[in-house]
Image 1 (spheres, helix red, strand yellow):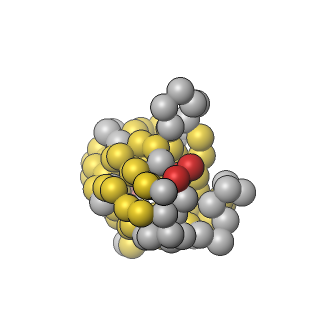
Image 2 (cartoon, rainbow, N blue to C red):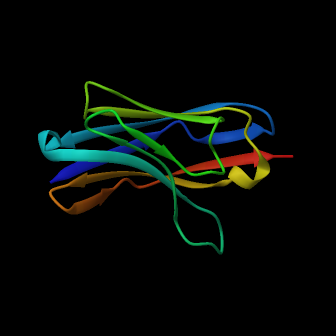
Length: 115
């Protein structure tokens, strides 16, 4: 199994920045991709960004050029640098890890962007 713990959420004004962190533990050697998802009130959970074990990244169109996903030690810690935040970025952000076809999730961290 893989355990994920997010941190770094909070309240920020529009145009500001936040950095989210996700610490992975457990069977991290089996992770082939990690990512960030978010869920706003009344909306479905959506992909924000993904990074594979090979370092390839994918971003949602809505965050391209503003958010950057990265990882340290390949599969142990993952970050999401969020710049130029907008009120529509307000959501609970979840860390995800895919390992051997199974999805693991963190508990989520709230990001609130005020206008």
